[in-house]
Length: 262
Length: 185
Image (cartoon, rainbow over all chains, first blue to last red; front, side, top):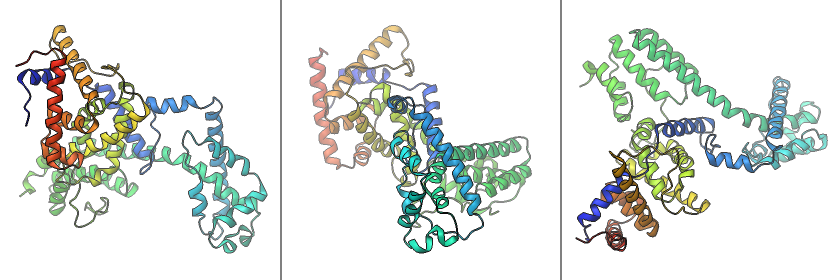
């Protein structure tokens, strides 16, 4: 194979020393945005808040669009709340999954469908048409079967979907923050050599966020707490170390649990 | 409350468990991703967005990363796709574009810094002349110290093809340097 000459190698080495490097601020900003985006919409492409691309999308929208979207989301949220309260005591109709799928997610560029939904929402005739199209077993799911006025199920379907979609990212963001706070408290308890209280905080985390995003961190801290307390975590320790070979807690777990490791 | 770690996401019993932590991968490979994106033609103004997209995809696909697979190769695969989307969106910028979020050079003095920046600019011009296949191979093997099998994995290409592309890219690099006035051996 052609080898590079020493001069070419030198040129490459010099180019490597002048290669682009990201600043610490950029690193931190990108990580924060990534975690926020993932927490906001796992499994979906979330809008990226701080990036210039996201900014450029918003910049293309007319000035009235964002306030309008905010108002729609607010109205949708209120409608959801009202519909949920009123339907709480009645037998639940089959979920209008097809209709729910058709409602566009709240993305910056979906202003047109949302405006459409806003126009349709107060219309009683549209409300009657909605559920019967949406449900597979239309007769059984029709709102009048439950003795409800026709307009209410409409409220239960379209505007709530918009309101719910708008609130989910914020809720997940809050969840992640709450998870981090709990784990920070557990960390603090470990630092002050209070493994029992760390364990109870971790138990609280597990109860509240059984499917949370920081499960592996929780279990890592739990192992440290158990080892500090003197209870042998046995197989769990081996499993954890095997499954998280590059985990950030590896070295701490190894030093805390050294006597239980083979 | 169970003391086990059974609350981890369910995995197929036969598949090896994902062993990488996102934080570790982010911290160790951020610079690599950033460099690759820039060298794959993402303009500086879009590098931050592109990095975000790469790591969002990584976060979601962490479970797909086999324990025996190269993390760099996996990330490069993602970066290649993201970069190609950005290239389509934006015309490739000529020359080196130093955005304000780029850290200062590690060179020791102003002369070194100027020489390094000039060499980097030269390299970027050369990379811009290569087609995507040769550019990826040259970049990974000559600049990122990938092994040939690792590149083959990253590009999902046969090993012989990788060697062939490297040979062609090296020959072009030598020719490019001669044209630019670099003295011959």
